[in-house]
Image (cartoon, rainbow, N blue to C red; front, side, top):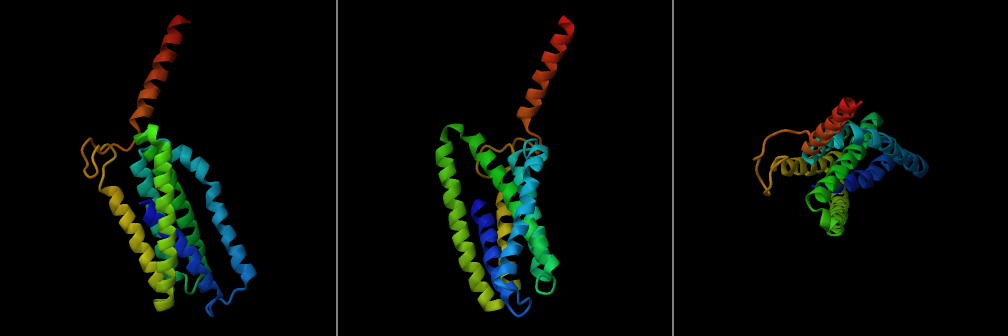
Length: 209
């Protein structure tokens, strides 16, 4: 999932430069550089979103939702970006916000599954992300040179759909690689247990008072 999501991130930002400097937009290097600042805006919403969604639901759910955000942005930008800058802005926001929130959920999942192996899981995550960015840059530029913006965008849609399919192959409470045993609940069970403990302590305090 990390591999495919980061491939889309790299593919978009590298091919975007070619599109904005082409005859369609004919932007200067300064304007293209300033456009990249749009990627900062979605990051400002990541902390509150993490508290409201990622911290309350199982990682699978947060990953799937993040990928859906990214898919929506890529679909809009791919088919409107060649004639509307608004489509490219929506795509930038969708990719940056979707991939970033999914990445946070990835790390929460790996750290929760093997707390004693955080260093190894971080290495695996970093290597996967780096390999995905290399592949996304290579494939995106190749497809753009052959078929333009829409063709490279089609590949990005395929990458994100592949990541989403992989996510949905494993349920939130499944203990093996593939399957949906354990139920479909999306709320974290540890939070429910913590809330019950907190309520019990409050009740005991009230009784003593």
